[in-house]
Amino acid sequence: MLIAGFDEAGRGAIFGPLVIGFVAFYESDLDYLESNSIIRDSKTLSPRSREIANSMIISRASIYDFVEISPSTIDNAIKRRYSLNQLEADFIANYILRFNQFVDKFIIDSPDTEERSFSRRILNILNKLDVKISEDKIIAKHFADRDFKVVSAASIVAKVNRDFIIESIKSRYKVDIGSGYPSDPKAIEALKSKKDLLKRFIRKEWYTYKRIEDEKQKKLF
Image (tube, rainbow, N blue to C red):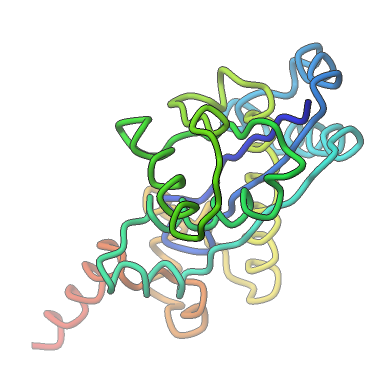
């Protein structure tokens, strides 16, 4: 039996993409995940520990992949009043469509407050594509990254690859954007002073960006 996990990183960031990690392990390999305490929710690990765990995941995963959802894609979705949850569901449904014949169960860290609503989002997308799949094959749970090791692994994949993207932006443009989140003073400083240089990496439909732009306009008058 092949079990897959999904999780994301960068959901609330002002800089950079939202990254969805996707991994799948045979049931016989789940003991490997369970026996390694370093493979757990990525938020509880140091950057170095995540890199080590990621290498371990790569060595044993039957499927290892991730997708970047760019700031422009996120902005366009928001302009169309398309929720971020629905956008995530679209990308996850696409993975399920590709791997449905190989994977026996898909477990997702649910971003929806009502868990079943997220799995229903995905099922509705698949139904529109005339893909028949049993409801119990898709499991969406809060804290799945804590409670299911295969989702912990997916959270590490997402976080490590998003961190690599953020570090690449810093290195290429010689600008410290910190973690890329609105709560990080470095990100806010970069947003104020290097907006034009970094504009392709900014989520312009985010409240933080609009607030800063409004403040700039007020200072002109």
